[in-house]
Image 1 (cartoon, rainbow, N blue to C red):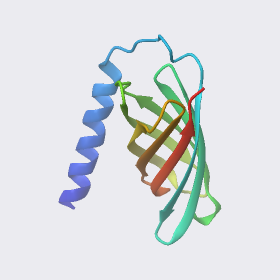
Image 2 (cartoon, helix red, strand yellow):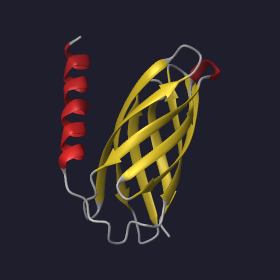
Image 3 (cartoon, rainbow, N blue to C red):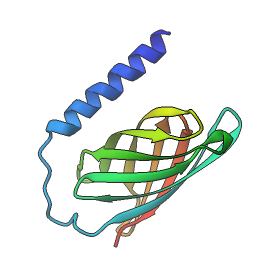
Length: 129
């Protein structure tokens, strides 16, 4: 129970920080797409997403055939970009909370790790144009 409260507090705090952090538009106009594979309670989950101007969207497939969309807010730092998000999923799964981080691995490739309350822990691989 304490871990859930701490996790929700951390996600809410990062969300408020992301909301009020000024973003630079320079160099962020071109979308940064990614694919994601994860797991939740033994089920494999998938997602595709893209990010533009510090805001992203992710279309995901969760357990029991649920499908949903998450809206993400990024804090754009030089190498690391943490994010928080809120989404909605079908099949009576409801509202999803998410958070994670994306890291530039090279000039054109980035990797990430995140958690979604419906899709579980996931890894991400994306390209930067």
